[in-house]
Length: 367
Image (cartoon, rainbow, N blue to C red):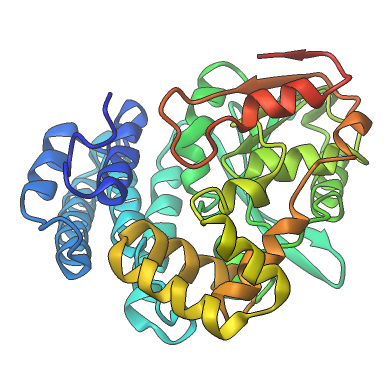
């Protein structure tokens, strides 16, 4: 499908609408509803975007609550799932000043609360968990197909640059449960509740994040220690692979997409002279150039704002330099875990990265 199918003149709006619509397979959206929502949004108008997705989320929530009140749990379950996805989508572009943005907070909490209500009505056993991490904990949830507590194969979801652990359910969690897997999802530094509530920022040495998550998983009696897979989604493809240079207990890695050098992908659309100016420390000039680019592109504006927030930085130039640390060059040969490397056909963020990663690996892998 062409990613510009919803908004022909705005690739970023179209991609995010397609992202929301794609979760229809597991109850996270109704395609006709998404088409109707998008028909009321002017391309690039973020006020329209928030208003229409929020209205749709509130409608889905109202329908879910009515269904729940008359004990129609199946309809309530699906209504809460749609509301969760629509609230998440409504919030997506609210990046100007997240920590002080009450609307951003409200939409995010609406998404997470609706997800928890949906899971309470699901046929699976759902559990909120706190995963020990350094001097604090990481928020997460664990879902299993039954209540027997027998050891079972398990998929761990590791999100990316902008995902939340609840979105992981639509991305792979529901499919995993349908096929007999347990599912463990978490928000790491820079993600979801970990950035919003704990102010934990992204870090390139992700082995210090994923290893505690695997430690936690292996304490559970319902996890088969010999059947653990880790799924890295989007930027998570880099994060999981980086962790696997030191962390070898998983039986397989699923990298969707595979990423060798997240920093080079992040800088792919920057002219070479701008990259050089950033490296030389001409921050005032570069920040001015970045501001011009951001004024002309929804995607660039969002990427810079989201990056400054999730990396804990003050300027676009700082962000451009920081992403250079997110590379597997000189490290990928230390990955010993078999890898399934995925390559999205029309990926406009990480194009070419899966092939580069595959070529650098010495471990067993499938492309």
